[in-house]
Image (cartoon, rainbow, N blue to C red):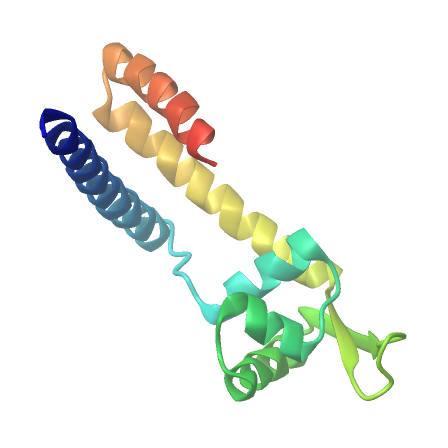
Length: 147
């Protein structure tokens, strides 16, 4: 019986810790994006996915982003109108097209990332002591192990 209680306690602790981590990281990310003036948008998430994975169809984008096909079509239309993505024939399926990030799209992503990185550096400089920075380094190592 004692072992069952210990297992339950460990599960509860892991769940509580997971919730605290999720909440803290979410709050941190939202605040950095807001302060850097780079809010999360369906467009930036779609561009990031195309950058990481490479060319995808609208259907594949919708599936990977867990959105409806129709919603993804609207996002794709906006990105294409702004010159952030381009379309090319899909050699595997003549009925669809592959979407790729353009150089302009790459530049926009890079500017957003640079702005967020600069904002994080500013917050670290303003709010953290040397001891806090060492703790943050250790925390990053642990968080990386979760990936």
